[in-house]
Length: 244
Image 1: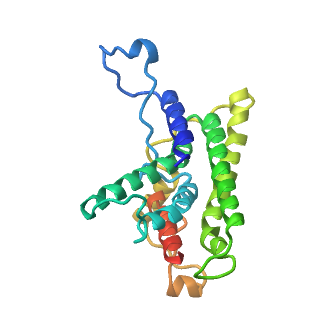
Image 2 (image 1 turned 90 degrees about the vertical axis):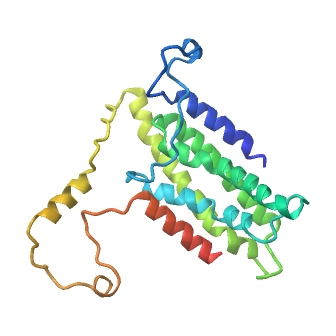
Image 3 (image 1 turned 30 degrees about the vertical axis):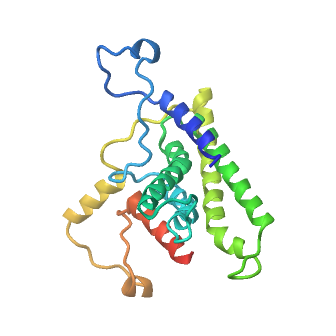
């Protein structure tokens, strides 16, 4: 519950930095905020191909809370039968707000600020999870180290996010100091998409070499094709939930 406080602060900071694309001519807030305080899009499920594994790790970090939320024993309040759906709805909103900063910091344009906020927030969740495991490691279902068995996927995802935000900070700091030029805006068509279309329109070439057992029996990958972030996030979240 207390994670909502820093979460809302991070959302407000990133929203203030975000610029609005459209601004009304008669807007009383324009004199104070200008074109700031825009809406943060946490994840573009349609055309996002960058940070795919980072978004997947953010989804994976929510797996424990999602499974706990939809478990039959989740009844934080004593309410009538007809009101349990509203309790679950409020719990889902709380989980969404608690983990919203992960996605917002990954998708924000202001990488220096978002990397610092995202690293601090991920580190806080990592420390809290470690403390929870160390205080009560055993359980009644699996015996010794039951809590570690259940929470190691979240720790792994949080550790991945810590490394990702640190990498973002190290890339954004030279640009902020003027040591490196700022990267250009991304084009509408990704480079691998253009290569994939050219490959589809070209004549098929004969297969060079023999296919491996994995390519023959399971999946034959295409070097010019990439699964979008929605597929990577769905697979990671599904695997972790099945493990739990």
